[in-house]
Length: 95
Image 1 (cartoon, rainbow, N blue to C red):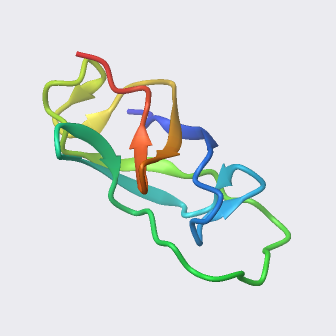
Image 2: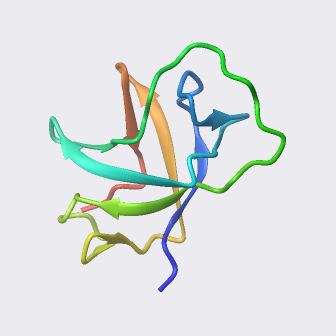
């Protein structure tokens, strides 16, 4: 089973964001405040940039009412994460 991966992340102040790509390796999406949020988001000061980007996969998704959620696995081919109102959000989330 292939997991969805993060094709673009606009949370540029996240420690795992490298040129709008997620290099976390794996992320967790959770449902907080009626929004699908990237639980892995971590705000940190400037970091040493890695040369190679790892593609961030969705390792677990707790948003059970999402169309792409099957047994807490994200089945979307790709997801987009945006940063709005101090929250990293999964904008691929769909009922």
